[in-house]
Length: 311
Image (cartoon, rainbow, N blue to C red; front, side):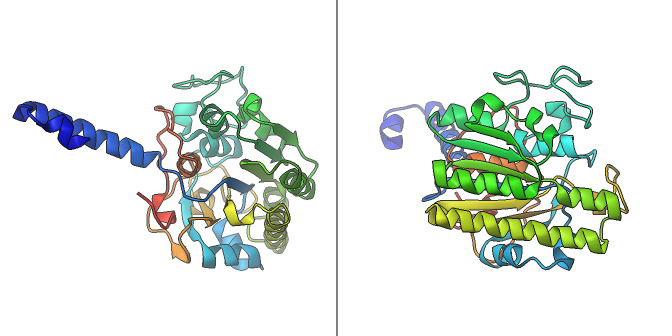
């Protein structure tokens, strides 16, 4: 097609056409779908720090790192509190863009106006992007913290459910795998953060809570296998923030560093990522897996290094 366009053109026209073709090629590569991947599951463990993973008994996350790609130095956004970071993770941007600056944010109560809004009046999320790009996709979210739901474009979800604890959230997700075989599922677990606030980040109880989260992650994998989804699935485990002593929200490495662990169809094996990963890159990575164009207002970039055949 390029030779046909160029034939008989002036040098200036040829240069313009070449620039347009190059731009088209870049745009198309940014939308590339990961071959064979039909299901994506994100397990978001509130308050789970990289150090917690290093200290706890986490065979399932350890296996994910051996068989997939990972960073234990990914970064949250400031402030290192839950709402701004969960929002950034699913909205592909930071608080400066989406306007979720604290846990006091509500859809009708905010200080910073978002730079863009979607159909529900909030900054565009990966849920809405997937619904618009793949109208027939089955999309689900099971969250252990009731505040998570207000950040999600609920009308884009086939299931958006507030669970009663991490076990209930996991069981609901696994049940939904069997019943609906969803294309995209977000599972939010809150108990690690509770342990940090109650006993302290790095305490014995906190480490036990991280180990418990790993068991729920194992249940997720078991559920994917039982539903016949495992061979075509990608699973990503991450967190919203770390912690220090019995809190978070400040500007320390213990609070801002988070794990980012991905495995499954098309993912590189045993690869520690060298590319800097920000939490908002999660949304762009999911869009990349599904071959979707990200909204112009997103600042996120897909973590291409995590995939075997990235373009």
